[in-house]
Length: 179
Image (cartoon, rainbow, N blue to C red; front, side):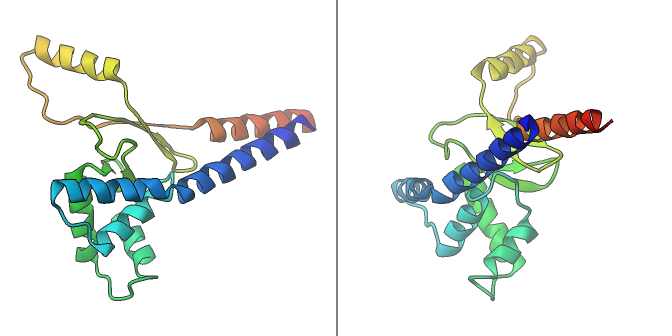
């Protein structure tokens, strides 16, 4: 019974997260305003690529984005997506997940310059962006001690997210109970 309740809560949480992510039209509005203020052009294709990336907790590869983009724009080709990704990266609206060569939306949409630590679930593929000034400060202190000038941070950790961990724990409990 406890297992069924836990699984139900995990399932409901996943649905809620997806719905919230899909309903966040303010994010698109925010990048439109930022682009207007910067005097850069947010084309419909760039906007669509951003919306595709932002609509998921999982990182998306360029070819996954291309396949999704082709549903609305059948003439879309790889250079279309790569140019859009370059633009979105330059503007700070997305991050590249280096270890998987994929992309996620930036949690602050470049509202301020920051470096992120990405937590990547190897089970479900969700990516969580964590910002910790203390963590970055520690890295900068260590670099300074060695006379090193940091120009870019790529900090990614792979593991298992809380939801997948609870699913694994519930499966273990079920197996133990079945014995």
